Image 1 (cartoon, rainbow over the protein chains, first blue to last red):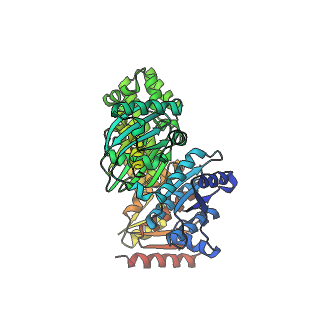
Image 2 (cartoon, each protein chain N blue to C red; image 1 turned 120 degrees about the horizontal axis):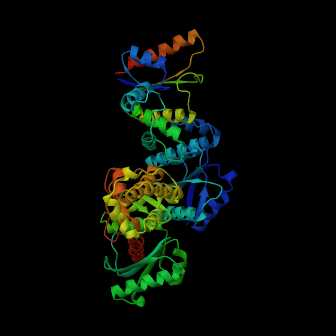
Length: 407
Length: 144
């Protein structure tokens, strides 16, 4: 079955990115399609939608979206994309996303591109769209059965989890170096803790940046992108399988914000404009303060970010603010709190307004162990997020849980 | 009733709405609050970073800050409006001398609210001006 992804776009042809979009879709078994519209449809659609952009191609995007909303064109998912830095397109893109979600059940992802399109990130988004369409039954799985393992090869850390009869019986993590060696190490330790041998494991699921490599190495039953796997792991860990939630995963290299309904993701945003909104920035902060990253959260809890304001979207200039603050004699506690607040604020500004945040908010990933960051996210959003136990293992738990559905 | 006017700083529309017994929601009122509260008597240069961040509710971070700053002021007015009067095709010197993208977004937000709205064309002569006033009067009198 070929999944049809309806592309609503402006600028892709002349930005040298259309080929990459087609390639990413093809590689996950999907085909990019364009809803047919007649010339007469366009003005009528723009009038109905209520936003009258100057750009004719944005008008065309609107007309195509209306075709989908009216169910006059058959598609399985929607990909909305336009040039980064175009104000009019950014406004239309966001409102079209909202419109599609209000009027259809189609999964939708938005993306703003530059000529240097990040193919790996685009692939993850396309893959997630296809997974949501094709594996709905698997994603609805609420309990892990049998003896299974999950491996999450992230940009900063590699995690392994062994699960049996809906319980975690072994786990381990390490910094990611060589993808396979790191995975072997954590899997071995997790198996040791669980008291099982590799031959006993009935299914293994891989996720994260190294998923394909590890999937091949271990002959994994499930090789799946982290957006859907992580959201599954998060709702299982937080015991929020039913109802709505927003999952926030501030990662080492990119951030994910995913909304779920009954454990199935229906909207997500991934990425971030710069490292200033990531766990990497907090690592840099800890290094400058000459403390371990594990200590940063507690230090930040004692400080007040208002005393050492940071005003930068960039990790380099963010650190410059921090150095200036320290030079002025600000306390380590205030500087640590300011760094956490800066990351939380940027995640809010850059990502969370792209989705309609639903409650409760479940904060997961390695950075959720930094209490100062969780506090800062709570302050920015006006609601303290839930941090479930083992929150750094979401990907591995999701892998173990979903792969058990393939037994 | 509370009536949003677009352009939001139009003195003519403000006067018409008030004259026909309604409360105009205008940029002037929003700016007055800022003058009173942060005591920078230089509108709209008293828009703060916090305002621009609040504007994220209406437009994403990729949208220029000037649009977000405008929407932070006008968006809450649109949210509380019971009706709207929109004047289009006006010369650039009429109303807000500003960003067309913001103007497009304002019209869209009004449309999304689904409130009663009248759209009139900027009059080019006295006869057209009388027609516009008549249209606005009829609309405002019809509001319950």
